Each structure stands twice: as C-alpha cells, then as structure tokens.
Amino acid sequence: MGRSAPDFELRDGTTVGERLRTSKGLLLDFDARSPLQALASRWGDRITYVASEARDRLGLSAVLLRPDGFVAWASDGIPDDEEAAQAAARWFGDPTITSA
Image 1 (cartoon, helix red, strand yellow):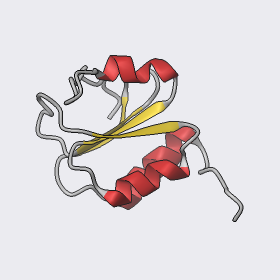
Image 2 (image 1 turned 60 degrees about the vertical axis):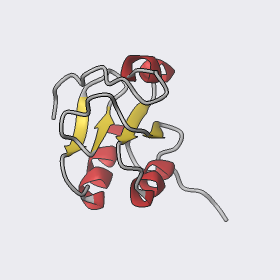
Image 3 (image 1 turned 90 degrees about the horizontal axis):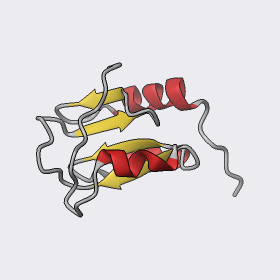
Image 4 (image 1 turned 180 degrees about the vertical axis):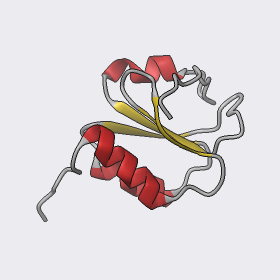
C-alpha cells in the first residue's frame, strides 16, 4: 500500500489513468466479484467500481486506488471484504447512508 498504481490497461482499452480523471477512488475487480461490487456501492459517491480483466494485472485479483492513483488496498488472492471495507473507510470516510 502507499505505492503508485501501474497504469493497468483494461479489456475495453481504457487505462487506470483515464478512469481516475473523475477524481473518485477506483475499485478494480479483475475477477468480477459481487461482494466487492456491493462494497463499492456503499461508497458510490466516492468510489467507482470497475469489473474488468487487465492486460497485465501483476498477479492481483483486486485493487482499491485513491483518486491520486496510489494503492489504498490490494489483494492477490480471494479478497478479504472486511479488509477492503476498512481501507475504503480509512481513505474515503464513512459509507453513504441511504434511506429505504
């Protein structure tokens, strides 16, 4: 953590650098897992979730990036949803509360 993320090229041809232009965090899920998508939706106003394969994912299965392109959290195996949530809260504050 705390390292600048590689400029992963995603399946659709976009890169991490292009995706970070929104000034939001980015949760890249290279294996499209529903729990990570649900987690990202809790911070939907501050984190963009992207499920996509990358040209070279460097052995990672998922990575959470801060808006400045630094790694807030990464996983090289089955992601620990609790660790991902803790990293999201640390860097992006409390999750958005929605009323039903």
